[in-house]
Image (cartoon, rainbow over all chains, first blue to last red; front, side, top):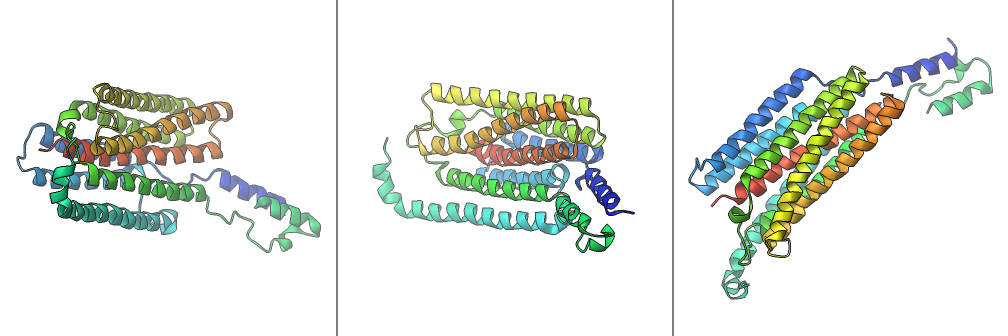
Length: 127
Length: 212
């Protein structure tokens, strides 16, 4: 086998590569049905005034959103711990850490700041 | 890579002896997809900052309207449906791509684009309605952060639709070649990522915003 043939062969292999993603109809439909269910529940909770306590409702909504995001990641974005030799997952975990720090840190600090500024805010926030 | 080997092999004798490095591609076949994933993660951080801004400012009404007064859940339910449907139709397009069926794939892409355009129309009408009533982004910190977050998402959807149109033209001209498949998979990740962000938007902004 000459080098040229081998190169050609390697190139063909590359060309026929399926890019490592194996999407299936079953996978997409599973994800879609789960996403629909996880969307309908929070809308029903809020629009039907099912839960009277706002903070309980908020926790449930956020929980369902988190589950739905995981569903999207697995069934639509084809995430698993093995894709791209684990680099996908590593980048995702790093991003989640940053997102959690950004979100919880901002809300936590600004809540306390607002809390401490309350007496001043009362006189200054008039339109 | 293949350029390098082919320039070296003719230099002398039987080519196989001179192939001292990998004849195959040293990059993983889907390195582009990993790179695109890293881009999506950085985009995720942009949205995290906008979500944090909304989380901090979302209840600062400055005497203006509250979330319960201006946010319309039926509109959001419609938008959520459109975007979720566009996600699954893009999925069908990817399935057709895997079977190398060009025309059904293009048809699904058209459906996806129309659903995305429908989403944008509904969202822009909502924005126009808010602004017409004097509840534009300048009204209060709540509305500023609301428009920034939802508007940035809408801008992403707009870019996604433009990209979709360009890709459809490329597929029509060149067919389902390897490069086009790679691009289609990148756009698929982008599109599904926008749906993931929208899950956060409708939960954190709309549903929690109208809670008493």
